[in-house]
Amino acid sequence: MNKLPITMKHEGIHKAKTINIKVADIDTRMIPIVQWLNAYESVMTVGCCEGDKKENLPQVSFICCDSLILSYILRDIYEFNDAQPTYKEKGFIFRKGTIDVGISYMPTILNPIVYSVNFMTTDVLDNFIRWRRL
Image 1 (tube, one colour):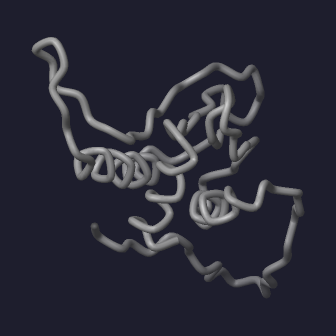
Image 2 (image 1 turned 45 degrees about the vertical axis):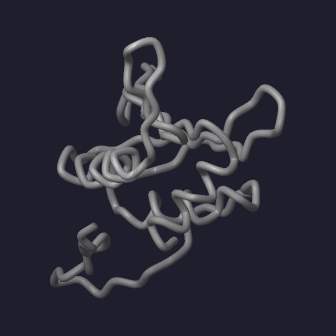
């Protein structure tokens, strides 16, 4: 897993200062994932939930305006999935404990595509956080 620089410094002719723009309440288990995604300048998370033991799975939704950064995020997810154990059922090979990425349309001016990272279980969420060293 390659570590890439995920922020860029403002190097213009004007004096610049870093400020916090938004603060949000986040489910405790989701904090490392939200921080990881929002560390990229071109990413903005728009929702998340750590799920529960019954019906709701852990997920985070985000907008990304840079296809290269999106490829870094997807690469990390796909590498995690590839590292998961496999099992065979009815002649098909499946992977246990993986992450699914979905795409949906959100009619906004900024960017209409919202990506959703869906973890199969809270254990998968915890495993990804450890694997990614978040």
